[in-house]
Image 1: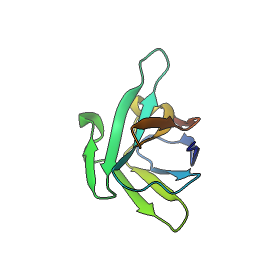
Image 2: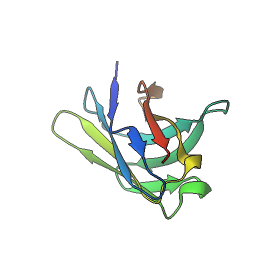
Image 3: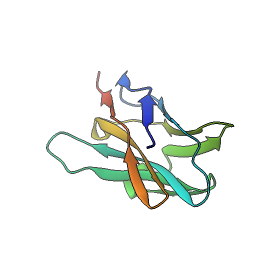
Image 4: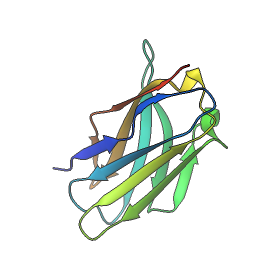
Length: 117
């Protein structure tokens, strides 16, 4: 069983930046994808960004040019980051770390990002 632990959420002013981090409880290897989703109040969970094999990244249109996903494979675990710049109130949501590995989906518990004055 893979556990994902996010950190880095919080309150940030409009136009500001925030970096989210997520660490896996075990090393994921082989054919895998890591990513971030988010869910705003009253809305469905949506894909933000994914990265495959620590190099091939995709982004939803609303964050292109502002967010950057990266991932690294350590000796015993993987880490995935989401650097968020030029944040707006529309980015306020609970952000979930995601992993697809060994034909299974894994989710973190979520971390709240609030963009407000």
